[in-house]
Length: 173
Image (cartoon, rainbow, N blue to C red; front, top):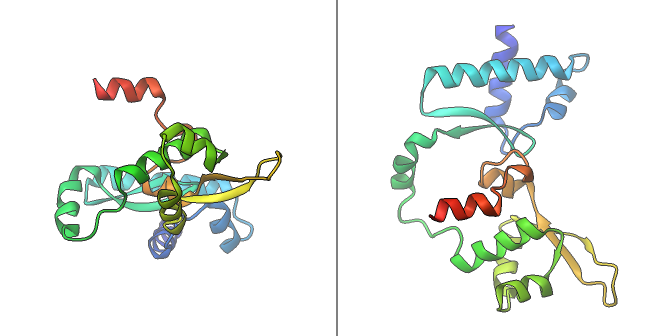
């Protein structure tokens, strides 16, 4: 049991993206997914109890080590001097895509009141937004949606964890 947890810990640590239970299951044929989840939940609990600098978290359909939120100011100090990740315009564009997906560029433009070509291009390059298909209307415009990396960056298990508009208004107040 302890060896299995140690192996899982090593695999999650070595993975560049959140590691899914399905992927772990491929590495351990014959092991039930519920058993893998149980070990992962035990590891999560152990990291929470330890209260160290990192936690094991379920995010974006998998598991990943993340720095504890309590220490975010220290991590920000470490990263100071690096260019900002997203401009306010890009964040607004990303919010429209996240809440209205799948969405076409014309709808994003209309919602924001400006041309979002530059922001959308940057979000595609950062792999926070992806092409999810084409709308079945004349001209077949491209539909955009968020990616797993979006979930990862914003520490969400899935899109259902996005705050509601009511919650956002309460935060502003």
